[in-house]
Length: 461
Image (tube, rainbow, N blue to C red):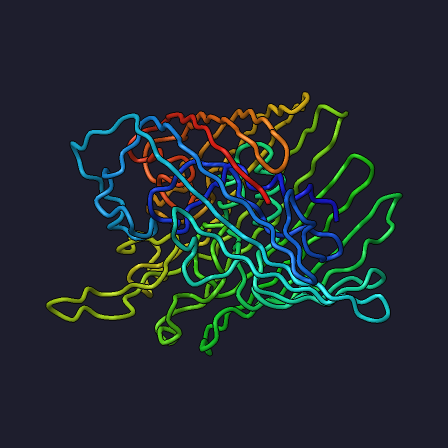
């Protein structure tokens, strides 16, 4: 496959580990995988190699100035956006421009052995730390092993990232300063814990190379009634200066969410909840393309369709006075209190509704010497749903982001970026967004528009 070198993939990393808390605006993270018939990433600048082992990775730091920033405006700032009590604001709280900072560190330990007959066995171990803490607690970015052959393709098994997140993150979102708002939104999942991935060799199709791939994961064990199931089908076509990436992800009984970076596990973290819950599912279909117009200009764009089945809200563990609060499931697009005029929908107190939406990405890059100027656009659209309660389906988000970077060579670069943020209305954020202030730190319940500007530095080894 034809992803760009991974040394360029780690600028401006755009999603915090917890989708429902306030999010820092930043640029895309290192995707951690390159698709060359399923083989490992090529080594970046200053890669360390010893025998069959290789060590690559990146470290970065950013500071961002955000307008309309209100860290303490939400009454429940760390609560799931889908829960009704998370809607409330602390009225009278002052807000305005403020600074947020970010540090990221992610090493990649690779292992490769040549076998007889042209076969290779490879392994990859990778984890990310954000502001000194494990990025997504309890989940590896990569912990897998693969068997490959240039004439047949590859088979990989273990923990890995999905194509719908990693390819959207890098090169597409990263190159346009919109990796988080593009790759980490929508109905997909980003991390797999025990997947099986089969990738073909490059096939000669219409004077170009076509690589096909299928990935399966059965999520967290212990679920019997609502067994998790994950399928992702991916295709990349490369012909001359044109690259087209297409993926379809279909899932059952993963965590209901709109966090495209999130791990696929089960309906809740606790299989003991199985009997109390109903089945749910979600899927995405996405196509992206990039075209190298000449040595200086590259243009790219993408379209994504999201589908959620919805998930009703139910208490999974009653309150035990005086110290414990009741526990709820992971719900999605709920009509709290069942306000519908259709009695058949009120077979449960808080029914969930299906929803669909479309999201768009486009932009361009211009290279001159060691400089690269770029501009990206992402639009998260309104959702279609029969839910009579407003859960963000009537809102949209438009982000315009220019950027400028300078490459010093040997893996070191500095960059600056900005963003203009416009919501369709003041209220809950769009259905495709995991939180009300995700991606920009501008809360859609507080401000209809805002902006941010930041600078950063990154070293890739």
